[in-house]
Length: 294
Ligand SMILES: [Fe+2]
Image 1 (cartoon, rainbow, N blue to C red):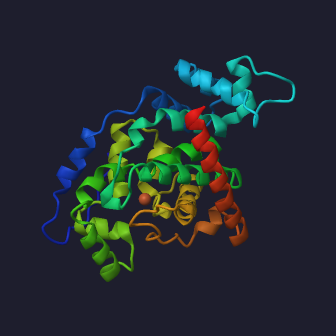
Image 2 (image 1 turned 90 degrees about the vertical axis):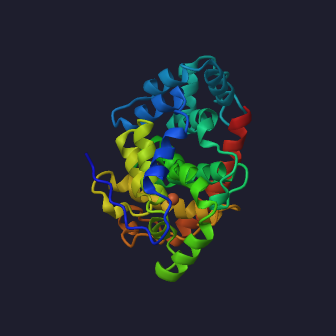
């Protein structure tokens, strides 16, 4: 049993127990999504395992076939007529993206004003992080499907903490600037008693999210603090910064999370390569939005 380490809040705190208890108010993850997360977190999984998940949902299976037959992906050899062939044509990264953008309704809160997100703001920011994570993962030896899923999930704690921050966000920003060099998560801990990453870890446990993804949630702003899954943790850590730079609606916390100084050990990319990743995130967002409609 892991010990929850919580800093003493500054004054008149929102009781941490009440914040953590609010995790139980969120609905469960859709079954398709839960199954997919289990598959991608298994290092020995195959494309057939993903096919079995897609097959759970007839509309998802139909969308997979439509995507494989779309102008962008349809092979020169002709129509794709079976789900197995469609899965081969699309590959893991695209399949994970298709399943999650279509199945992750619970991750689409209407607005999170505590973080400055309007309607769909949280969702769009999370999809950008997912796309950036998979993009960097392919260059760093991390499975892209696992990275896509992890990037999508890292800020789930905001869905709960956002409601408590509505009345506290000005204080959090003031404390961040006054005491923590701008770091938003340190100010969350100081004012509320818990930050969105730690709270997200509680939610990940409630949802039964597999270990690597749950650790990505918990450690995404401090990837050096956990010895396992280091490469994945650093990939989502850097991807979060890339997504924040590319996002037109980055939220009030935006760029208020310093990069861990060890990041180049695990994500050995230069400034030019990161700029190129930014451009690919923009292109990826367009594709993801198409997937919602296909
Ligand atoms: Fe975060």
